[in-house]
Image (cartoon, rainbow, N blue to C red; front, side, top):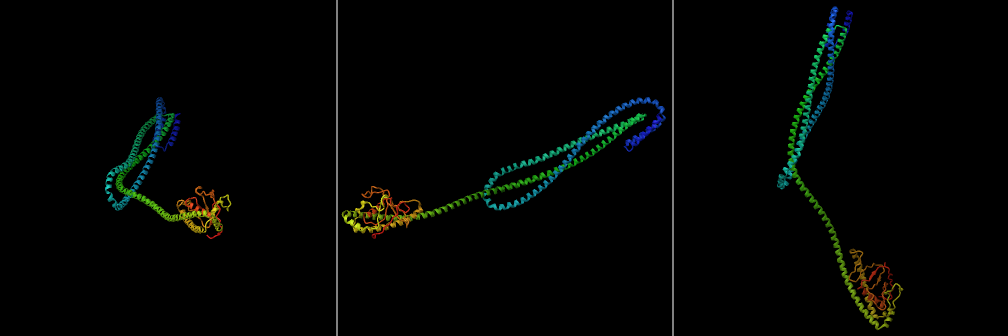
Length: 582
Protein backbone atom coordinates (compact mmCIF):
# COMPACT_ATOMS: atom_id res chain seq x y z
CA UNK A 1 0.00 0.00 0.00
CA UNK A 2 2.86 2.31 0.62
CA UNK A 3 4.32 1.99 -2.86
CA UNK A 4 1.40 3.49 -4.82
CA UNK A 5 0.89 6.23 -2.20
CA UNK A 6 4.43 7.59 -2.41
CA UNK A 7 4.39 8.59 -6.11
CA UNK A 8 1.08 10.37 -5.56
CA UNK A 9 2.61 12.32 -2.74
CA UNK A 10 5.61 13.03 -4.91
CA UNK A 11 3.37 14.51 -7.57
CA UNK A 12 1.66 16.67 -4.95
CA UNK A 13 5.03 17.82 -3.71
CA UNK A 14 6.07 18.62 -7.30
CA UNK A 15 2.97 20.72 -7.77
CA UNK A 16 3.68 22.50 -4.56
CA UNK A 17 7.27 23.04 -5.63
CA UNK A 18 6.05 24.42 -8.99
CA UNK A 19 3.78 26.82 -7.09
CA UNK A 20 6.60 27.91 -4.82
CA UNK A 21 8.94 28.73 -7.73
CA UNK A 22 9.74 32.35 -8.25
CA UNK A 23 9.97 33.08 -4.55
CA UNK A 24 12.94 34.16 -2.49
CA UNK A 25 16.20 32.35 -1.84
CA UNK A 26 14.74 30.70 1.19
CA UNK A 27 12.11 29.04 -1.01
CA UNK A 28 14.86 27.85 -3.30
CA UNK A 29 16.54 26.32 -0.32
CA UNK A 30 13.29 24.68 0.61
CA UNK A 31 12.96 23.41 -2.95
CA UNK A 32 16.41 21.85 -2.72
CA UNK A 33 15.40 20.27 0.53
CA UNK A 34 12.26 18.89 -1.12
CA UNK A 35 14.37 17.34 -3.87
CA UNK A 36 16.50 15.76 -1.25
CA UNK A 37 13.36 14.49 0.37
CA UNK A 38 12.18 13.06 -2.96
CA UNK A 39 15.43 11.31 -3.35
CA UNK A 40 15.21 10.03 0.15
CA UNK A 41 11.63 8.89 -0.43
CA UNK A 42 12.77 7.01 -3.54
CA UNK A 43 15.41 5.38 -1.47
CA UNK A 44 12.91 4.76 1.32
CA UNK A 45 10.48 2.95 -0.98
CA UNK A 46 13.08 0.27 -1.23
CA UNK A 47 13.53 0.40 2.46
CA UNK A 48 9.81 0.30 3.46
CA UNK A 49 9.99 -3.06 4.92
CA UNK A 50 12.92 -2.12 7.09
CA UNK A 51 11.11 0.99 8.26
CA UNK A 52 8.24 -0.87 9.92
CA UNK A 53 10.51 -1.58 12.79
CA UNK A 54 11.41 1.99 12.93
CA UNK A 55 7.68 3.10 13.19
CA UNK A 56 7.68 2.54 16.91
CA UNK A 57 10.64 4.77 17.20
CA UNK A 58 8.78 7.36 15.10
CA UNK A 59 5.83 7.26 17.48
CA UNK A 60 8.17 8.31 20.24
CA UNK A 61 9.42 11.03 18.06
CA UNK A 62 5.79 12.13 17.40
CA UNK A 63 5.49 12.96 21.02
CA UNK A 64 8.55 15.02 20.60
CA UNK A 65 6.92 16.74 17.62
CA UNK A 66 3.93 17.56 19.83
CA UNK A 67 6.27 19.29 22.12
CA UNK A 68 7.66 21.11 19.13
CA UNK A 69 4.12 22.15 18.20
CA UNK A 70 3.72 23.60 21.63
CA UNK A 71 6.90 25.50 21.04
CA UNK A 72 5.49 26.69 17.71
CA UNK A 73 2.36 27.94 19.52
CA UNK A 74 4.60 29.87 21.80
CA UNK A 75 6.41 31.22 18.75
CA UNK A 76 3.04 32.27 17.30
CA UNK A 77 2.32 34.18 20.50
CA UNK A 78 5.66 35.79 20.13
CA UNK A 79 4.81 36.64 16.53
CA UNK A 80 1.54 38.27 17.65
CA UNK A 81 3.53 40.30 20.17
CA UNK A 82 5.87 41.27 17.40
CA UNK A 83 2.88 42.29 15.27
CA UNK A 84 1.60 44.53 18.04
CA UNK A 85 5.05 45.99 18.42
CA UNK A 86 5.20 46.56 14.66
CA UNK A 87 1.83 48.29 14.79
CA UNK A 88 3.15 50.46 17.55
CA UNK A 89 6.17 51.19 15.42
CA UNK A 90 3.86 52.10 12.55
CA UNK A 91 2.04 54.52 14.81
CA UNK A 92 5.38 55.88 15.90
CA UNK A 93 6.35 56.21 12.24
CA UNK A 94 3.12 58.12 11.61
CA UNK A 95 3.91 60.38 14.51
CA UNK A 96 7.38 60.86 13.13
CA UNK A 97 5.91 61.69 9.72
CA UNK A 98 3.60 64.26 11.36
CA UNK A 99 6.59 65.63 13.22
CA UNK A 100 8.44 65.78 9.90
CA UNK A 101 5.54 67.79 8.47
CA UNK A 102 5.66 70.12 11.45
CA UNK A 103 9.42 70.40 11.07
CA UNK A 104 8.99 71.23 7.40
CA UNK A 105 6.40 73.86 8.33
CA UNK A 106 8.82 75.26 10.88
CA UNK A 107 11.56 75.22 8.26
CA UNK A 108 9.26 77.18 5.98
CA UNK A 109 8.50 79.59 8.81
CA UNK A 110 12.21 79.97 9.42
CA UNK A 111 12.70 80.66 5.72
CA UNK A 112 9.87 83.22 5.85
CA UNK A 113 11.50 84.76 8.91
CA UNK A 114 14.76 84.84 6.99
CA UNK A 115 12.99 86.67 4.15
CA UNK A 116 11.48 89.08 6.67
CA UNK A 117 14.87 89.59 8.26
CA UNK A 118 16.36 90.28 4.86
CA UNK A 119 13.56 92.73 4.11
CA UNK A 120 14.06 94.36 7.50
CA UNK A 121 17.78 94.57 6.75
CA UNK A 122 17.00 96.26 3.44
CA UNK A 123 14.57 98.65 5.13
CA UNK A 124 17.07 99.39 7.87
CA UNK A 125 19.73 100.08 5.28
CA UNK A 126 17.31 102.35 3.45
CA UNK A 127 16.50 104.07 6.72
CA UNK A 128 20.21 104.50 7.37
CA UNK A 129 20.63 106.03 3.93
CA UNK A 130 17.68 108.30 4.61
CA UNK A 131 19.11 109.24 7.97
CA UNK A 132 22.41 110.05 6.35
CA UNK A 133 20.70 112.23 3.76
CA UNK A 134 18.67 113.85 6.51
CA UNK A 135 21.82 114.47 8.50
CA UNK A 136 23.35 116.18 5.47
CA UNK A 137 20.23 118.30 4.93
CA UNK A 138 20.00 119.12 8.59
CA UNK A 139 23.66 120.08 8.70
CA UNK A 140 22.99 122.49 5.86
CA UNK A 141 19.95 123.82 7.70
CA UNK A 142 22.05 124.18 10.80
CA UNK A 143 24.53 126.28 8.94
CA UNK A 144 21.78 128.50 7.58
CA UNK A 145 20.14 128.80 10.98
CA UNK A 146 23.44 129.53 12.70
CA UNK A 147 24.05 132.33 10.24
CA UNK A 148 20.61 133.77 10.98
CA UNK A 149 20.82 133.36 14.72
CA UNK A 150 24.33 134.62 15.35
CA UNK A 151 23.11 138.06 16.27
CA UNK A 152 20.55 136.63 18.70
CA UNK A 153 23.04 134.13 20.11
CA UNK A 154 25.55 136.82 21.03
CA UNK A 155 22.99 138.33 23.41
CA UNK A 156 21.70 135.06 24.80
CA UNK A 157 24.93 133.00 24.99
CA UNK A 158 25.63 133.79 28.61
CA UNK A 159 22.15 132.94 29.82
CA UNK A 160 21.86 129.86 27.63
CA UNK A 161 25.22 128.46 28.74
CA UNK A 162 24.07 128.46 32.36
CA UNK A 163 20.71 127.00 31.45
CA UNK A 164 22.29 124.31 29.28
CA UNK A 165 24.66 123.31 32.08
CA UNK A 166 21.65 122.85 34.31
CA UNK A 167 19.32 121.25 31.76
CA UNK A 168 21.66 118.99 29.66
CA UNK A 169 22.36 116.30 32.36
CA UNK A 170 18.69 115.95 33.17
CA UNK A 171 17.81 115.86 29.46
CA UNK A 172 20.45 113.20 28.70
CA UNK A 173 19.32 111.07 31.63
CA UNK A 174 15.72 111.38 30.41
CA UNK A 175 16.70 110.35 26.91
CA UNK A 176 18.77 107.41 28.17
CA UNK A 177 15.84 106.33 30.35
CA UNK A 178 13.55 106.60 27.27
CA UNK A 179 15.90 104.54 25.10
CA UNK A 180 16.59 101.87 27.72
CA UNK A 181 13.15 100.22 27.59
CA UNK A 182 13.31 99.95 23.78
CA UNK A 183 16.80 98.38 23.95
CA UNK A 184 15.74 96.08 26.76
CA UNK A 185 12.63 95.06 24.85
CA UNK A 186 14.70 94.29 21.73
CA UNK A 187 17.20 92.31 23.81
CA UNK A 188 14.36 90.45 25.51
CA UNK A 189 12.84 89.61 22.12
CA UNK A 190 16.18 88.31 20.84
CA UNK A 191 16.71 86.27 23.99
CA UNK A 192 13.21 84.83 23.72
CA UNK A 193 13.84 83.87 20.12
CA UNK A 194 17.18 82.29 21.05
CA UNK A 195 15.52 80.37 23.84
CA UNK A 196 12.75 79.18 21.52
CA UNK A 197 15.26 78.05 18.91
CA UNK A 198 17.35 76.30 21.59
CA UNK A 199 14.22 74.57 22.89
CA UNK A 200 13.31 73.44 19.38
CA UNK A 201 16.85 72.19 18.90
CA UNK A 202 16.66 70.23 22.18
CA UNK A 203 13.32 68.73 21.18
CA UNK A 204 14.70 67.69 17.80
CA UNK A 205 17.78 66.17 19.37
CA UNK A 206 15.64 64.26 21.85
CA UNK A 207 13.45 62.98 19.02
CA UNK A 208 16.50 61.90 17.07
CA UNK A 209 17.84 60.08 20.08
CA UNK A 210 14.51 58.33 20.66
CA UNK A 211 14.29 57.39 16.99
CA UNK A 212 17.85 56.06 17.06
CA UNK A 213 16.97 54.02 20.11
CA UNK A 214 13.89 52.69 18.39
CA UNK A 215 15.88 51.79 15.28
CA UNK A 216 18.43 49.99 17.43
CA UNK A 217 15.68 48.11 19.23
CA UNK A 218 14.11 47.19 15.90
CA UNK A 219 17.44 45.99 14.56
CA UNK A 220 17.95 43.87 17.66
CA UNK A 221 14.44 42.46 17.24
CA UNK A 222 15.16 41.76 13.58
CA UNK A 223 18.32 39.86 14.49
CA UNK A 224 16.36 37.91 17.09
CA UNK A 225 13.71 37.08 14.50
CA UNK A 226 16.35 35.97 12.05
CA UNK A 227 17.85 33.70 14.66
CA UNK A 228 14.43 32.26 15.41
CA UNK A 229 13.82 31.71 11.72
CA UNK A 230 17.07 29.88 11.41
CA UNK A 231 16.14 27.73 14.40
CA UNK A 232 12.77 27.04 12.84
CA UNK A 233 14.37 26.13 9.53
CA UNK A 234 16.67 23.76 11.29
CA UNK A 235 13.73 22.27 13.07
CA UNK A 236 11.90 21.94 9.78
CA UNK A 237 14.84 20.18 8.22
CA UNK A 238 14.94 17.79 11.10
CA UNK A 239 11.22 17.22 10.91
CA UNK A 240 11.33 16.70 7.15
CA UNK A 241 14.07 14.20 7.60
CA UNK A 242 12.10 12.43 10.30
CA UNK A 243 8.61 12.62 8.79
CA UNK A 244 7.89 9.72 6.42
CA UNK A 245 4.20 9.48 6.55
CA UNK A 246 1.79 11.45 4.44
CA UNK A 247 0.14 12.98 7.48
CA UNK A 248 3.43 14.24 8.67
CA UNK A 249 4.15 15.66 5.20
CA UNK A 250 0.84 17.52 5.14
CA UNK A 251 1.50 18.96 8.57
CA UNK A 252 4.95 19.97 7.45
CA UNK A 253 3.54 21.59 4.33
CA UNK A 254 1.11 23.63 6.40
CA UNK A 255 3.87 24.67 8.72
CA UNK A 256 6.04 25.54 5.74
CA UNK A 257 3.31 27.75 4.29
CA UNK A 258 2.83 29.50 7.59
CA UNK A 259 6.52 30.02 7.92
CA UNK A 260 6.78 31.37 4.37
CA UNK A 261 3.99 33.84 5.11
CA UNK A 262 5.74 34.90 8.27
CA UNK A 263 8.96 35.31 6.31
CA UNK A 264 7.26 37.50 3.72
CA UNK A 265 5.70 39.59 6.47
CA UNK A 266 9.06 39.97 8.18
CA UNK A 267 10.67 40.99 4.88
CA UNK A 268 8.05 43.66 4.38
CA UNK A 269 8.58 44.94 7.90
CA UNK A 270 12.31 45.03 7.23
CA UNK A 271 11.76 47.04 4.06
CA UNK A 272 9.51 49.45 5.94
CA UNK A 273 12.10 49.83 8.64
CA UNK A 274 14.79 50.46 6.04
CA UNK A 275 12.60 53.18 4.53
CA UNK A 276 12.14 54.64 7.99
CA UNK A 277 15.88 54.61 8.50
CA UNK A 278 16.33 56.46 5.20
CA UNK A 279 13.74 59.02 6.25
CA UNK A 280 15.45 59.40 9.61
CA UNK A 281 18.73 60.00 7.86
CA UNK A 282 17.09 62.65 5.71
CA UNK A 283 15.64 64.23 8.84
CA UNK A 284 19.07 64.27 10.42
CA UNK A 285 20.50 65.94 7.33
CA UNK A 286 17.68 68.50 7.34
CA UNK A 287 18.28 69.13 11.01
CA UNK A 288 21.96 69.70 10.40
CA UNK A 289 21.19 72.10 7.56
CA UNK A 290 18.75 73.92 9.82
CA UNK A 291 21.38 74.14 12.52
CA UNK A 292 23.77 75.67 10.00
CA UNK A 293 21.15 78.16 8.89
CA UNK A 294 20.35 78.97 12.48
CA UNK A 295 23.99 79.69 13.20
CA UNK A 296 24.21 81.86 10.10
CA UNK A 297 21.10 83.74 11.18
CA UNK A 298 22.55 84.21 14.64
CA UNK A 299 25.66 85.70 13.09
CA UNK A 300 23.55 87.99 10.92
CA UNK A 301 21.47 89.03 13.91
CA UNK A 302 24.60 89.83 15.85
CA UNK A 303 25.92 91.91 12.95
CA UNK A 304 22.57 93.68 12.65
CA UNK A 305 22.47 94.36 16.39
CA UNK A 306 25.95 95.83 16.18
CA UNK A 307 24.86 98.03 13.27
CA UNK A 308 21.74 99.03 15.18
CA UNK A 309 23.78 99.98 18.21
CA UNK A 310 26.08 102.08 16.01
CA UNK A 311 23.05 103.69 14.38
CA UNK A 312 21.50 104.34 17.81
CA UNK A 313 24.72 105.98 18.97
CA UNK A 314 24.73 108.18 15.90
CA UNK A 315 21.05 108.97 16.36
CA UNK A 316 21.60 109.80 20.03
CA UNK A 317 24.40 112.19 19.09
CA UNK A 318 22.27 113.66 16.36
CA UNK A 319 19.31 114.01 18.72
CA UNK A 320 21.49 115.71 21.32
CA UNK A 321 22.73 118.20 18.74
CA UNK A 322 19.19 118.69 17.44
CA UNK A 323 17.78 119.22 20.91
CA UNK A 324 20.45 121.77 21.71
CA UNK A 325 19.52 123.64 18.55
CA UNK A 326 15.83 123.10 19.21
CA UNK A 327 16.24 124.59 22.67
CA UNK A 328 17.82 127.68 21.16
CA UNK A 329 15.14 127.85 18.48
CA UNK A 330 12.45 127.28 21.09
CA UNK A 331 13.70 130.17 23.20
CA UNK A 332 13.80 132.42 20.17
CA UNK A 333 10.32 131.30 19.15
CA UNK A 334 9.05 132.01 22.65
CA UNK A 335 10.53 135.51 22.47
CA UNK A 336 8.97 135.99 19.05
CA UNK A 337 5.59 134.74 20.24
CA UNK A 338 5.68 137.03 23.26
CA UNK A 339 6.57 139.98 21.05
CA UNK A 340 3.81 139.04 18.60
CA UNK A 341 1.30 138.85 21.44
CA UNK A 342 2.47 142.22 22.73
CA UNK A 343 2.24 143.72 19.25
CA UNK A 344 -1.28 142.32 18.84
CA UNK A 345 -2.35 143.73 22.19
CA UNK A 346 -0.79 147.08 21.33
CA UNK A 347 -2.48 147.09 17.93
CA UNK A 348 -5.83 146.35 19.61
CA UNK A 349 -5.24 149.13 22.12
CA UNK A 350 -4.26 151.51 19.32
CA UNK A 351 -7.42 150.63 17.39
CA UNK A 352 -9.52 151.14 20.51
CA UNK A 353 -7.81 154.49 21.15
CA UNK A 354 -8.40 155.49 17.54
CA UNK A 355 -12.08 154.65 17.86
CA UNK A 356 -12.25 156.60 21.12
CA UNK A 357 -10.47 159.53 19.47
CA UNK A 358 -12.94 159.44 16.60
CA UNK A 359 -15.83 159.38 19.06
CA UNK A 360 -14.23 162.18 21.06
CA UNK A 361 -13.66 164.18 17.88
CA UNK A 362 -17.34 163.76 17.01
CA UNK A 363 -18.33 164.71 20.55
CA UNK A 364 -15.94 167.68 20.43
CA UNK A 365 -17.54 168.86 17.22
CA UNK A 366 -21.01 168.46 18.71
CA UNK A 367 -19.83 170.24 21.89
CA UNK A 368 -18.40 173.09 19.82
CA UNK A 369 -21.67 173.37 17.94
CA UNK A 370 -23.63 173.33 21.18
CA UNK A 371 -21.29 175.92 22.67
CA UNK A 372 -21.69 178.17 19.65
CA UNK A 373 -25.47 177.73 19.88
CA UNK A 374 -25.32 178.50 23.59
CA UNK A 375 -23.27 181.64 23.01
CA UNK A 376 -25.67 182.81 20.33
CA UNK A 377 -28.67 182.04 22.52
CA UNK A 378 -27.09 183.76 25.51
CA UNK A 379 -26.48 186.85 23.41
CA UNK A 380 -30.05 186.81 22.16
CA UNK A 381 -31.35 186.27 25.67
CA UNK A 382 -29.28 189.19 26.94
CA UNK A 383 -30.72 191.33 24.17
CA UNK A 384 -34.22 190.15 25.00
CA UNK A 385 -33.68 190.86 28.70
CA UNK A 386 -32.55 194.37 27.85
CA UNK A 387 -35.62 194.82 25.67
CA UNK A 388 -37.86 193.42 28.40
CA UNK A 389 -36.36 195.84 30.90
CA UNK A 390 -37.00 198.70 28.53
CA UNK A 391 -40.57 197.50 28.06
CA UNK A 392 -41.01 197.25 31.83
CA UNK A 393 -39.79 200.81 32.19
CA UNK A 394 -42.19 201.98 29.49
CA UNK A 395 -45.04 200.08 31.18
CA UNK A 396 -44.22 201.73 34.47
CA UNK A 397 -44.28 205.12 32.76
CA UNK A 398 -47.59 204.22 31.15
CA UNK A 399 -49.00 203.20 34.53
CA UNK A 400 -47.91 206.48 36.03
CA UNK A 401 -49.57 208.30 33.13
CA UNK A 402 -52.70 206.19 33.58
CA UNK A 403 -52.87 207.18 37.22
CA UNK A 404 -52.60 210.80 36.19
CA UNK A 405 -55.36 210.23 33.65
CA UNK A 406 -57.57 208.74 36.36
CA UNK A 407 -57.01 211.69 38.56
CA UNK A 408 -57.92 213.99 35.68
CA UNK A 409 -60.99 211.84 34.90
CA UNK A 410 -62.19 212.14 38.41
CA UNK A 411 -61.96 215.90 38.16
CA UNK A 412 -63.75 216.24 34.80
CA UNK A 413 -66.13 213.25 34.26
CA UNK A 414 -68.65 214.96 32.05
CA UNK A 415 -66.17 216.15 29.51
CA UNK A 416 -64.60 212.74 29.34
CA UNK A 417 -67.96 211.11 28.63
CA UNK A 418 -68.58 213.37 25.68
CA UNK A 419 -65.11 212.77 24.31
CA UNK A 420 -65.43 209.00 24.74
CA UNK A 421 -68.78 208.94 22.94
CA UNK A 422 -67.40 210.96 20.05
CA UNK A 423 -64.06 209.24 19.68
CA UNK A 424 -64.35 205.44 19.85
CA UNK A 425 -61.58 203.42 18.25
CA UNK A 426 -61.87 200.35 16.04
CA UNK A 427 -59.85 198.11 18.35
CA UNK A 428 -60.71 197.08 21.86
CA UNK A 429 -59.74 194.56 24.53
CA UNK A 430 -62.81 192.69 25.67
CA UNK A 431 -62.74 190.30 28.56
CA UNK A 432 -65.87 188.35 29.20
CA UNK A 433 -66.95 185.07 30.75
CA UNK A 434 -68.18 182.08 28.76
CA UNK A 435 -71.64 182.42 30.08
CA UNK A 436 -71.94 186.07 28.97
CA UNK A 437 -72.71 187.10 25.40
CA UNK A 438 -69.68 187.94 23.23
CA UNK A 439 -70.61 191.65 23.00
CA UNK A 440 -71.29 192.12 26.68
CA UNK A 441 -69.43 194.80 28.61
CA UNK A 442 -69.20 195.16 32.37
CA UNK A 443 -71.46 198.03 33.64
CA UNK A 444 -68.91 199.18 36.18
CA UNK A 445 -66.64 200.39 33.44
CA UNK A 446 -68.81 203.28 32.14
CA UNK A 447 -67.28 205.98 34.25
CA UNK A 448 -63.74 205.14 33.10
CA UNK A 449 -64.30 205.98 29.40
CA UNK A 450 -63.69 209.73 29.73
CA UNK A 451 -60.33 211.23 28.96
CA UNK A 452 -58.89 214.33 27.45
CA UNK A 453 -57.79 214.66 23.83
CA UNK A 454 -54.23 215.36 24.75
CA UNK A 455 -53.99 212.29 26.89
CA UNK A 456 -55.51 210.17 24.09
CA UNK A 457 -52.90 211.28 21.62
CA UNK A 458 -50.09 210.44 24.04
CA UNK A 459 -51.64 207.05 24.77
CA UNK A 460 -51.94 206.26 21.04
CA UNK A 461 -48.29 207.10 20.53
CA UNK A 462 -47.14 204.94 23.43
CA UNK A 463 -49.45 202.16 22.27
CA UNK A 464 -47.91 202.13 18.80
CA UNK A 465 -44.47 201.87 20.35
CA UNK A 466 -45.66 198.98 22.57
CA UNK A 467 -47.12 197.13 19.59
CA UNK A 468 -43.84 197.45 17.73
CA UNK A 469 -41.95 196.16 20.76
CA UNK A 470 -44.32 193.21 21.06
CA UNK A 471 -43.80 192.32 17.38
CA UNK A 472 -40.05 192.42 17.93
CA UNK A 473 -40.43 190.17 20.95
CA UNK A 474 -42.50 187.68 18.96
CA UNK A 475 -39.89 187.49 16.20
CA UNK A 476 -37.15 187.07 18.80
CA UNK A 477 -39.15 184.37 20.54
CA UNK A 478 -39.56 182.49 17.25
CA UNK A 479 -35.79 182.50 16.72
CA UNK A 480 -35.06 181.49 20.30
CA UNK A 481 -37.50 178.59 20.13
CA UNK A 482 -35.76 177.29 17.01
CA UNK A 483 -32.46 177.16 18.90
CA UNK A 484 -34.05 175.77 22.02
CA UNK A 485 -35.56 172.91 19.97
CA UNK A 486 -31.99 171.63 19.30
CA UNK A 487 -30.98 171.86 22.93
CA UNK A 488 -34.07 170.46 24.72
CA UNK A 489 -36.96 169.38 22.47
CA UNK A 490 -40.40 169.12 24.00
CA UNK A 491 -39.73 171.50 26.95
CA UNK A 492 -41.05 175.08 27.70
CA UNK A 493 -38.33 177.08 29.46
CA UNK A 494 -38.98 180.24 31.49
CA UNK A 495 -36.49 182.88 30.48
CA UNK A 496 -35.87 186.29 32.07
CA UNK A 497 -37.61 185.52 35.35
CA UNK A 498 -41.42 185.74 35.15
CA UNK A 499 -41.68 186.34 31.38
CA UNK A 500 -42.72 183.34 29.20
CA UNK A 501 -41.51 183.38 25.59
CA UNK A 502 -43.78 181.46 23.20
CA UNK A 503 -43.55 181.15 19.43
CA UNK A 504 -46.32 182.34 17.15
CA UNK A 505 -46.64 180.97 13.65
CA UNK A 506 -47.48 183.61 11.09
CA UNK A 507 -50.78 183.37 9.24
CA UNK A 508 -52.74 182.04 12.27
CA UNK A 509 -55.02 184.03 14.64
CA UNK A 510 -53.67 185.00 18.05
CA UNK A 511 -55.32 184.21 21.41
CA UNK A 512 -54.59 186.09 24.59
CA UNK A 513 -55.41 184.19 27.77
CA UNK A 514 -55.31 186.11 31.06
CA UNK A 515 -54.92 184.03 34.23
CA UNK A 516 -54.04 186.37 37.12
CA UNK A 517 -51.67 185.16 39.81
CA UNK A 518 -53.84 186.27 42.71
CA UNK A 519 -57.44 187.42 42.60
CA UNK A 520 -56.90 189.77 45.51
CA UNK A 521 -54.32 191.88 43.68
CA UNK A 522 -56.75 192.80 40.88
CA UNK A 523 -59.85 193.27 42.99
CA UNK A 524 -61.52 196.38 41.46
CA UNK A 525 -65.16 197.21 41.84
CA UNK A 526 -66.14 196.05 38.40
CA UNK A 527 -63.35 193.59 37.57
CA UNK A 528 -64.41 190.12 38.87
CA UNK A 529 -61.91 187.44 37.67
CA UNK A 530 -63.57 184.39 36.10
CA UNK A 531 -61.95 180.98 35.55
CA UNK A 532 -61.60 181.48 31.82
CA UNK A 533 -61.71 184.79 29.89
CA UNK A 534 -61.88 185.63 26.24
CA UNK A 535 -59.88 188.52 24.79
CA UNK A 536 -60.12 190.67 21.70
CA UNK A 537 -57.49 193.18 20.62
CA UNK A 538 -59.06 196.64 19.88
CA UNK A 539 -58.13 200.31 20.23
CA UNK A 540 -60.58 201.96 22.57
CA UNK A 541 -60.38 205.37 24.02
CA UNK A 542 -61.42 204.70 27.56
CA UNK A 543 -60.94 202.58 30.57
CA UNK A 544 -60.59 199.29 28.58
CA UNK A 545 -57.25 200.41 27.15
CA UNK A 546 -56.07 201.34 30.61
CA UNK A 547 -56.99 197.89 31.91
CA UNK A 548 -55.16 196.21 29.00
CA UNK A 549 -52.01 198.17 29.69
CA UNK A 550 -52.23 197.40 33.36
CA UNK A 551 -52.67 193.66 32.63
CA UNK A 552 -49.65 193.70 30.30
CA UNK A 553 -47.56 195.40 32.96
CA UNK A 554 -48.64 192.90 35.57
CA UNK A 555 -48.07 189.95 33.27
CA UNK A 556 -44.45 190.98 32.83
CA UNK A 557 -44.11 190.10 36.50
CA UNK A 558 -46.42 187.02 36.42
CA UNK A 559 -45.76 183.83 34.42
CA UNK A 560 -49.42 183.09 33.79
CA UNK A 561 -49.59 185.30 30.64
CA UNK A 562 -49.12 183.28 27.45
CA UNK A 563 -49.63 183.30 23.69
CA UNK A 564 -51.66 180.37 22.40
CA UNK A 565 -52.09 179.16 18.80
CA UNK A 566 -55.36 178.68 17.00
CA UNK A 567 -55.47 174.96 17.91
CA UNK A 568 -56.58 175.75 21.53
CA UNK A 569 -60.14 175.56 22.79
CA UNK A 570 -60.63 179.44 22.91
CA UNK A 571 -62.46 181.48 20.31
CA UNK A 572 -60.15 183.07 17.67
CA UNK A 573 -59.51 186.79 17.61
CA UNK A 574 -61.92 188.67 15.31
CA UNK A 575 -60.45 192.04 14.33
CA UNK A 576 -62.94 194.87 13.82
CA UNK A 577 -62.82 197.71 11.39
CA UNK A 578 -60.84 200.71 12.44
CA UNK A 579 -63.10 203.63 13.16
CA UNK A 580 -60.22 205.89 13.81
CA UNK A 581 -56.65 205.62 12.65
CA UNK A 582 -54.20 204.56 15.26
